[in-house]
Length: 556
Image 1 (spheres, one colour):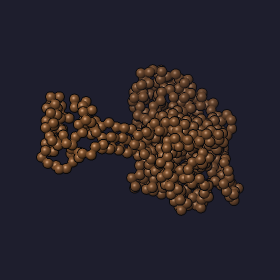
Image 2 (spheres, rainbow, N blue to C red; image 1 turned 60 degrees about the horizontal axis):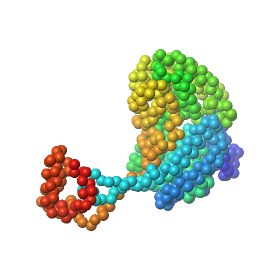
Image 3 (cartoon, rainbow, N blue to C red; image 1 turned 120 degrees about the vertical axis):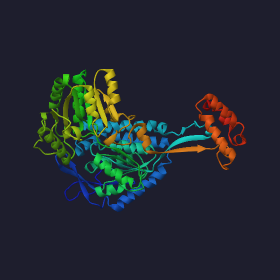
Image 4 (cartoon, rainbow, N blue to C red; image 1 turned 30 degrees about the horizontal axis):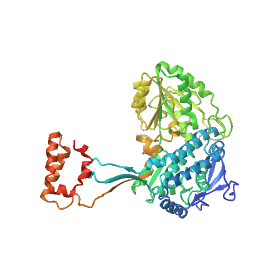
């Protein structure tokens, strides 16, 4: 992958370095191994920046931010499309690195990492200017009718992006792309487990001709990451990860009132209605549960199926899940790779064992295999209920628990009874029921007869209520999250405004009359006070009558 940036360490591993100001900077803070989760063995290493080097990276980002804030949308679009071309040119290479470092199959790396990134980059290049263009605002306040007013969306400065290991290319690339499109510089801190993939994003921007320091990618110890969160020099922090870590990020950022966007976890429900196309629902639910080995915040982590179709649906799920091939993510034909981290596998195993102890039945999988790597088999659990961790806590692994319910009412209530609210899916052929599910399910995104795919839609905001986060990424809302809203107004005339000093008796009476002239509930009452306004000399001297006449609609 790319070049080897330093001589091999004593173990014989190639060492890669942080990218700061377009240079590969060898860290003085130690070395961290990159682990292949399919084997559990190291295949490369990353040098870690020390505190002084990290300070240089932050200052480099600050310098770049000042220059890039003045860039045109055309310049930003040109850079993003150059990154787009570079990513497309190296797509096969990038997908294989994702498979090797993170563990998802190569075909899935293309579909879930490279493809969404290409779509988002092109969408940002095409539409960022339209989304962030200055908006002229005509005041509804009659006394402000003469003002020129507008809302601007200005860059924040430096955005700190802290990104996870489950989608090590797509999540940072879409975050970085949006920040750059909005006129910001970015300091990217990728997850320790997938740092090599994160470094490639910096190299893609370097290959595309990005200005020095615009996108810096740093490999650091966890303690330094905490210090970054408390650094007042960042205009915003975008964090994607667990709810527990999200709380820490929010607390650290609060010390300087640094705004945050937190894209956190999910315990995403699927409701299978009695009228659903069961073949379609089973195929979609199995994919939604097991793609990326279940390590997706939008994975289907609990299913509520109506009793009349429960047996048939479960049988179809078991048949499909039993055919999944788990193995080397670099091998053709592999459907499910390993989990990325052994500690995550321990959580998955614990959830399954607790569910089995409480009466659930493993219809597929359920037992950790005795083989190298961090594998856990696709597991289907019948007899699940709300008292089990596997139905309430984020499992983040290849486990599909199914609970039978008596009605859609019961299913919606159980689906909404969660501290999370990222996505939800409904499976039905009834348009009215589909509309009800979309209306009543409490989630940031609700899909009917599909799941997860909204992440690949560049215009769809991503995020959810409650423990699923704060703010949004992606789409118009996500792009504007990376700007500072500024309201601007300009007086075209030179006369003193009506409400300026002196606060004399005439002003006191005129203001009282003005309130009735504009807001009295009855038309006759308003008209009588409007006529009274014409008797004030201060009104004639200080109010722009021509501008006021153009907004006479506000009088009636």
